[in-house]
Image 1 (cartoon, one colour):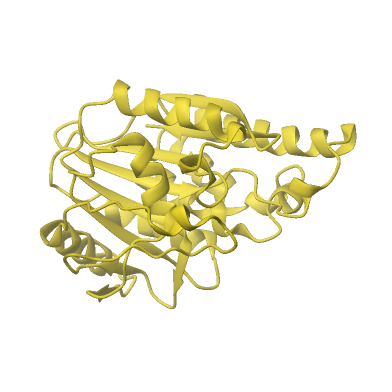
Image 2 (cartoon, one colour; image 1 turned 45 degrees about the horizontal axis):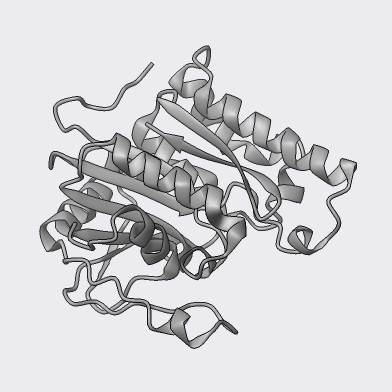
Length: 270
């Protein structure tokens, strides 16, 4: 059941953003990701504004970017010089930031407004692929330290109250994020663990038989899923999905399965 408010025409997307700036540097292992994100962007109406939750930003309280002319944060190391010259001058959206702040505050999650912090690569890498013109107003929202799944589901519930029409909410993470495993041989056992968790994730986000309460309960207890801690030794790349599901509540409209850096990876669109 799709439960987004049709009057506001919100879209919600959880995406797997790949490895640092590599998707923008011509890396062949990211070709499927680039094709998928470009296809998703073409399939949707152009957003009026984008609200992005990045795996690469954690604060003690949920924090909303509220400044203008914000810099990019090149939060990666050891790449060619061109990786540090990437530009994405998206317009600021202080009115969207204020509404997000107000909705989070109304839900009692004690948000913070930050007028100085810029945009990390969890934001500018996928958006440069999807909307290269950089002409859509954007804000970014942090994860909360401690990485409590229920806190992030609650953040999503709060953000679902935003009334501005035409918003695109993006949870920018990676559905598989065991960094050591990326550099290990892809044995049948490791492949099976990757696929087992990915199948659970797809069923949780896509399964029409689950009620909204059951779906959120599964995500709250995500550590009990098959091979959960193998796929996410630390869960910061998964929790943007919790925010997305907290916003959408219902089954996703479409799921995308792809190979990314040799691992089975998923994206979900509501």
